Length: 122
Image 1 (cartoon, one colour):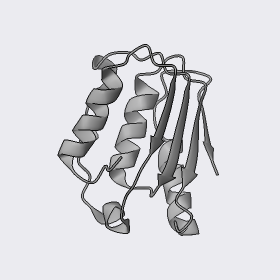
Image 2: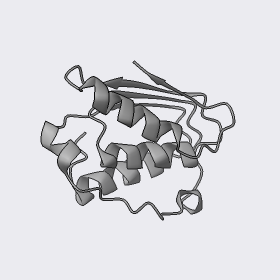
Image 3: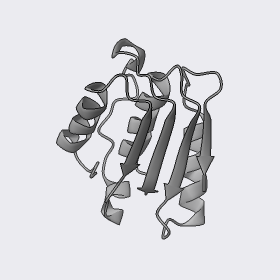
């Protein structure tokens, strides 16, 4: 899944919203390193809790680059998934340690609808 522009990110949101009873979600991003330099598409003021609740329990997110659009998608998943147990993140192998740390810190600041949701970053 490419998350490098508004249309593709919008499609990701719509696909996920179309399956509100889905319990497990696997996302593999195919992004160029230019994506982490792309301007963020989501507004930080978006009220994700008004969009609708999901039944997600486990999310696997592979080859993430730490882009703002990926953070936006994860923010949505955390805010709309009150039954979420964990998100397993496997960043791209070429993600620099400093960017990985910055990405992890952004993820830790996100609101979670589930009191037990863990984010595991490998």
